[in-house]
Length: 244
Ligand code: ADP
Ligand code: MG
Image (cartoon, rainbow, N blue to C red):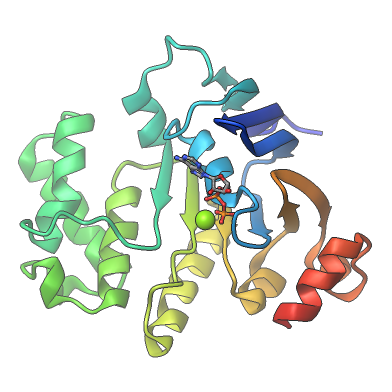
């Protein structure tokens, strides 16, 4: 087995008396696309958030590209530029244009000159399919377009890993497909991706591996075919019967 780009070792996360993560261990290889599914409250978001330092862990270790990010000396900006995250609700700056949303983190975090950052931003707006929206503010964009800007903003940091937390859950049905296609293109280009989603079509088609979580634990993981056609864990079976 090659060196994994993500190594999660016996990670637990406690919120008061609640164990949001309970002894999670997993390894993700470079270029792998892992889809995480599971009921609401099962710890999916908490797990993603621990991978880019948005959440500290109560126990265990998380290695990103060989660096233990639980170590308090880790440079959080460096980590966040390595590990991009896309959220359900885009989290764009409302008072900045699409272009400026993509420029800002580059100048702030990577110290890029404005001109260079703008060139990167324009190329990425092209890549995500909305070059003509550079001057629009978030509220002048559809949900799908805002999510494209958010993805471009993450990509501008040249991340090694992209995390998607229900990135299409807040979108109108007619814009979901375009964003999923964009995610699929990223996967095809070799991006390492960890994707929390309810889109089982995407999981089946794009995932190399599907992980099922419940109660803060990984209860099952398998290739998509195995996972959807021959689930083994009784809670996986119940969950799939409810959503498929
Ligand atoms: P999922 O994304 O699978 O729906 P989450 O990871 O968001 O689940 O949450 C897992 C559990 O941790 C839930 O019970 C949730 O209420 C709790 N939780 C998440 N974040 C916090 C927080 N900041 N403070 C307290 N409890 C939290
Ligand atoms: Mg969540």
